[in-house]
Structures are given as C-alpha cells and as structure tokens.
Length: 255
Image 1 (tube, rainbow, N blue to C red):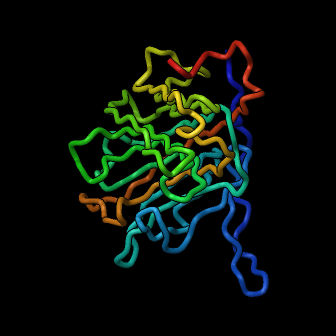
Image 2 (cartoon, rainbow, N blue to C red):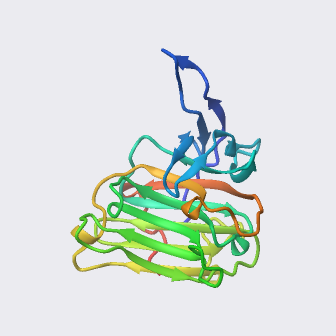
C-alpha cells in the first residue's frame, strides 16, 4: 500500500524578530511542519549549536551541518514544540553515512526527558570507535528503573540515499532502514537492517506518552571529528502517519 508523503513546498519562515529584548528562535518549515532551530551551548555533547547550520533549500530539503568557525565546532538540531504519539515515522536521508567520522552522530528521534527514559532513536553513530557498527536502533523505557534496549548494525548502503523509519505503538516499536531506490514503499530486497522490539512488560519498557520530535547532527562529547572535516547531511523528506490513520492494508514495518 502506498503511504502518502508530505512533499509540500517548504521554506524558511523567520527568526530574528524581538520582543522585550528577547530574540525569537529561528523557525523552519519542513515537510509541511514547523521546526525550531537549536542555538547556544547545550546537550547532547554538550555542543555549540548554530542556527546557521540548519536550513531548507529551494527543493524543500532540510540541510544539517557540522561546521568549524573561529576555532570552534558547531552542530545542528531542529525540533518540534508539539508532541507526537503512536504512528509511523519515516525519513528520507541523503549523505555518505558509511563515511561518518567516529565522533559524529546523526539522530532521528523522539525525546521528552529526563535522560534515560521516554526516548526512541535511530542514530548513525560509532560512539568514538572507528571500527564499531554505525547503525543504532534504541528504545528508552517509560520508567527509569529499566535499562535501555538497543540493536546495533552495520551500514553499507549502495548509494547516498536511505529510508530510515520506525512504527511505534503501545506494545511494539519496529525499526527499518533501506537503500532508497525512489519507490513509495521500499522493497525488502533493499533492506539494510530491521529490529522489532516487543517486550512482555511493554507498559514499562516502551514510552506510552506523546513526545517532541528531533533531528540532529552533532559531535560525541563535543569532540572534534578526528579527520578535521566538516559534515553535511540532507533530510530529503519526512512523513508521519498517526496510528489511527494507517490503512489496514499497509505493509507491516515489523519485518
């Protein structure tokens, strides 16, 4: 079943108007939704976050960049102020992911906090070990007394474009990553990795609350890339289908 994508026009809205001396956060319109751009010094990392490192181009694609300026490294993040819940989440990503430096992290995720609970992640990261697998599917529990659950996997894409997605409901989180051949529904023959997380204690092990969505490109512990190179990744498109709107004949993401 074809899943409707949001390929609407996208653009930069605003960012620098002031009220009572306070600068309003830069806002982007991407995939038909509003995203705020992170700035200042903060976690994860911590990193220096630059508003200049996230932008939408004339094709409506979101660019995230790690840059070096005046002796410092800067990361990029966009996030939503509204929460999203159970449903299907899909990102179309373009970049040389298999060549990401061991200190670079690309994150596509839900996060509410506090740290250690209520988080669902797709992350391309080697966490400082150049020989480690790049891919990470992770679920942080609803309660702080349980550990996180994660699946690591090698990423060897056939090109620069991938589809990364997860389906989240109260009992299960299913992750998939594919080579992107341009089809509306990627065939299983293009699958890079998948993981179905379906614990018996799902009410405690899986987030049960709505959460903000984040997309970021950052440096582990704020450390410079060991190769000294800037990094750019493009999010070509994003789509969200709430659970109640998923057609019954939609192909399962749990395979």
